Image 1 (cartoon, rainbow, N blue to C red):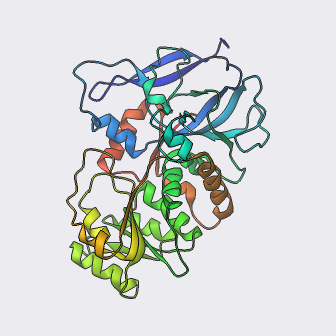
Image 2: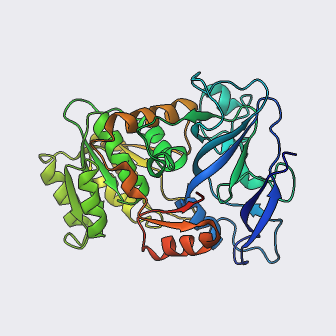
Image 3: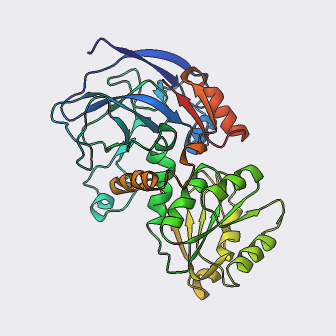
Length: 369
């Protein structure tokens, strides 16, 4: 052990109070990296886990674990044999980095076909913090990157408040959008102007699309314009699905959009509405409805209008590098760092999640230094 200790905010399952614990910071094994986290943001998945949306609330305390999977930090120690990041760029102690919170097995049928998510991926959530290497979640001062975990050096002009959501929000929407095509003159509709939706707008623009953003929060729609949305639709001004569909058709010259993407947290009713916003042969992307949601759909749009429905989760190694490149190229065009609207110290991690649940933040983050 290095003799250094680090704090971590641990949880015991939905419904149980969190507590701060201190653990010894391990030395990295060959091929591993120990990072010192500087910022960790609150993702929608963290909110779902906190509320017990995945499998309910356990009847008894679970083993302690560290939540969170969106982070940025600096290399604290490099294990033997590590001299570059995943893209081959030189890596040294003190360099700012982002990394993937999970690993692919590389052997299952999904991995061999290049399809995500890998059913055998090793995620931080399955590790108890009381066991070595202790630090496998974002809500802590350190993180242990196992050998083979993707890691990327952060460009100098990309601040922590932008880089922090590369390894979930931005990476997830960029990977989803890589599955569709935007011919010249295309339109894309984004349902939801939260963190995922705001990240999606610059990606759509970079792919050549004109962007329409739909949300009910005026403040978020104002931000959406600065992130590249060509038009916004305020659901309070267009209060019915029919009026919002008609507005999309009006903006797109009567034909509809080539791609509609939902990035909402708990509004499954947007799906049939979004499908009606599509042009013939369009694609509906579902990304945000993580949870036990059910949607009733007519099959006719898929059959007689050639509509495609694609679900997407996670991202691959190349996507993280592409998102960092996009941010570096467009820092003067889009206010990437402004998505982090509120920051909290590590000890206020629960408060940060509760603020996110209440909708009082665009995106909250914990700052460790």
